[in-house]
Length: 172
Image (cartoon, rainbow, N blue to C red):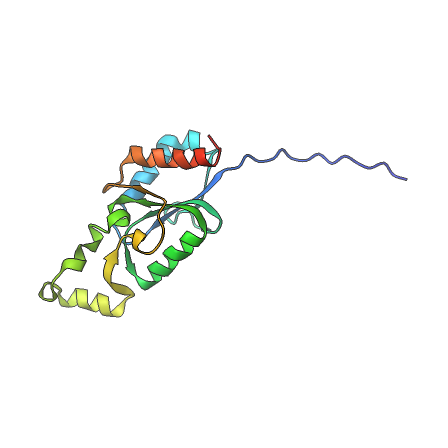
């Protein structure tokens, strides 16, 4: 009878926080700031964070089974509403990032336009694309666990939010 062989196993990989960065209707100033914050914190975060979804940084994205979803931008279309709800179902925590996500403005300023203030180009886009009548912050459609306010977001508040969730998950 042959002796059983001992097969070496690889050391268990340290768990990382699976995060996603999502951008809806906004100027995407928070995305630019997010990239700068990543540059400054890369050495610390590379062992703690796995960015599974960020269209600006990755070609292959997956928003399933996220620990934290960071969402910038207001919601202005039916497809955005459905995608936002799907993000919420696939993330343990959702953080609204920036003014548009937190309170809708400035993107929601079109909600206050009078009919005579809307020109033919705006009417064309409203009729031919997937826009809703009004623009809303993300909290009108899903439960938001946290907010990082500002336009652009407050960088120190964002870093504090990241650290808060890393601590909650026992990673720091």
